[in-house]
Image 1 (spheres, rainbow over the protein chains, first blue to last red):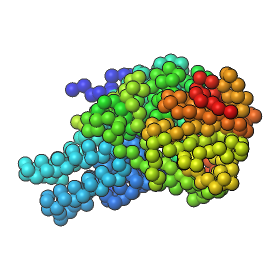
Image 2: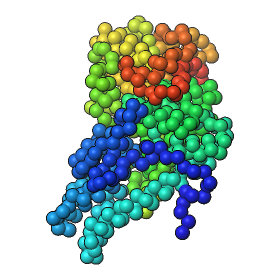
Image 3: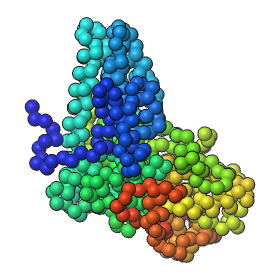
Image 4: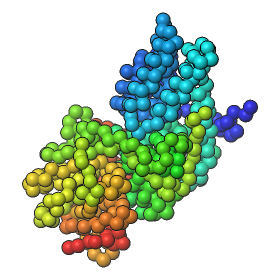
Length: 334
Length: 159
């Protein structure tokens, strides 16, 4: 059977952000994205509580969270010596519930429910539960990896010679890897990366990995997108998505909506990387996480301004499908 | 957490002069944009609004769209200079607010304000935040400090 993602002759160069969590010796190693670009450091995650913590604290985000979710079940299985199948199923269900609650905007339940269904099936069919669930999780991750590699190649095809692309936040390695392919194909391209307050994912992650891949990248403040669009400095927008709706609406890092509106106003094509899902009908049904305002108004323990003020930190925007020129989709369901 | 109602927010950006701030509707919550790279806009407004006993709510420069998309904004106030029939000069980020307001049918008030004389700022101001480096070494930065707001986006500009 042909493996997707291997049609092109261009070798892939992988970003550390593409696959930022992996099991090693029974321990889940999770790349601490908050320390990039200063250092590449992996956090040891040993159990569900720690898995939830790295997700809630945004030590890992976007695709990294899904890897943590899947591997959390492998940790449970690894730590299940002496447990009956029934007891292990209860443990897996408890893990699923904890992960589902960790960040409301993300569709973790779409993945955790699959894992629980495997566990129940193993019990019903009197299979070795540990072996069956582990192999299914590993096979699932292998399949996602192949699909993501395939999407990287499709992103590279979308990017044309002389493109100047605006991007926002970070898309977990895919754009940087696509940029590398474009470079191998001798396409001259340039990226504008918004810094993406308050966590600076655009500055710390996207600008960093694009630079590492040899791409030309210019950092801008989030408030400069209007200026560069009005001045004709960009001709394409490519962003990721954290959750997709059945009608093509999607949720992504805060700041995406205003980019979409201005891109439409200035006639700039707007592309989004999606993970299609039928679970949420439209953007109106999407739960949006509002984070602690301290994450906005404090930086390294100090208030960012003097004086008396409050803060408000919605974590995500919902963007209507009417703003989307094209979606580069990946199926993570099967 | 705020009890945010539709059309309940006045969104301010730029160094709006004091006599203009005196006209802020008391019924509205006042939100202000952070104003990267140097946060001058928000620092100025926090101080001036405190004199009027107003405690504003700070948002990052990428959060305005969210407020518009939820129909929370009642009006936008921009601290501008060189206002004429063609448009106005305002601090960077103002064009985003003007286009969002235009698309959402929200009035924009062009107020008298103090706007940066320089059009482009220093890269190091973008690469750092409150004294700490946030950008990787070796990347370029582009730091426009002002926006030109064409008059087409200034629906209800009043003196």
